[in-house]
Image (cartoon, rainbow, N blue to C red):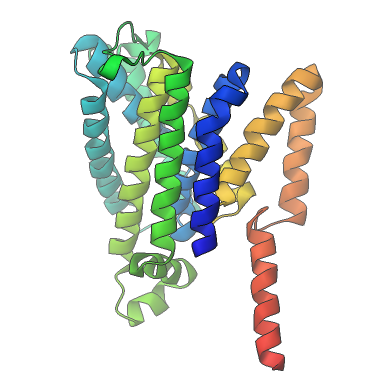
Length: 317
């Protein structure tokens, strides 16, 4: 486990120095860090607990709207609105899980799409609360310690902190009692129950933590964009991209979602600037190659191979 902390410290150090080395590529880096954080947060539920959700854009939107509406309409400082978003996301995840965790397999996944769509329609139609289809502009923000929150460099460090927090949380979970309970529930709920684990309670905790962390990223996303509207922030494609990032990188691994974010966001940017209109075709082919030849993800497949080799050596010895 020490090697993970060493890697983590090294990556954070590189992240801190990045704006000085590549000041012209901050927007791409912010997007990459946000997706790394969202995918890692999603993976707590979708990878470690085995409950595939395609509705996490709801939590992104919740965090974004709390910040946008709170700062623009009620003049509440963004750090307080983010804290309120974390609490609201945890409550939403608890109620959401209570309603849907009785569903199994694809039925749970379909239910998350339906609930996310309900939130999108509410955001569009309840203009008194969300600004409606026209969205919300963030015109002014306070300057804590003299920092301009509209600055791309400040946005970058906020996104870096978000990604670092989510990865650190997963690192702590991976070797904790809760982490082993998540694995047990993912592999076989009946066996987990026989060993004294309550699957619903474990999944609810995972969902609440996943939702709260995703909402944290959503609040930072709102500050980064300075404008949000329902068709973008609650878009189904955003939920799919978050899930796809974790799946391609490797579900149920510490670094898989980060590697997935680097591949999807990085390759997407390279293909868009290099191949112009053909970029989506090449981007899709790349994803197909990864899914076909590495079904457990870029990180998950080698990890599985190494584990099998270790067990084979022990069996022979």
